[in-house]
Image (cartoon, rainbow, N blue to C red; front, side):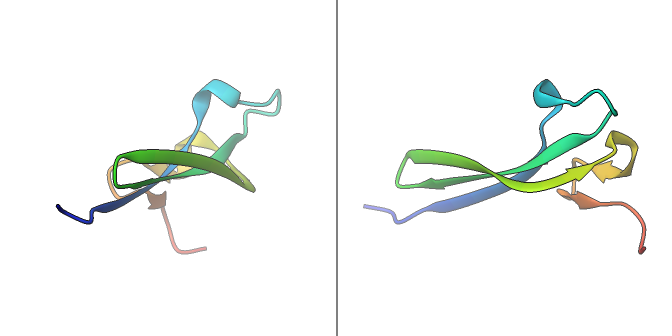
Length: 59
C-alpha cells in the first residue's frame, strides 16, 4: 500500500467576488480522501500562475 499525499493551491474562480477577487483554496488528498479549505486570502486572477500554483511577481 502506498502512502500518497497530494496538495494543491489554487485561486477558485467559481467563488469570485464583485470586486473581481478570487479566494485562494488548498486541496489536500491523503490516501484517496480529499479535503479542501479556504486560506481566507484573496487575489486578482491576473496575478495568479496556475502552473506553479503561486503568485506572479515579487511584491
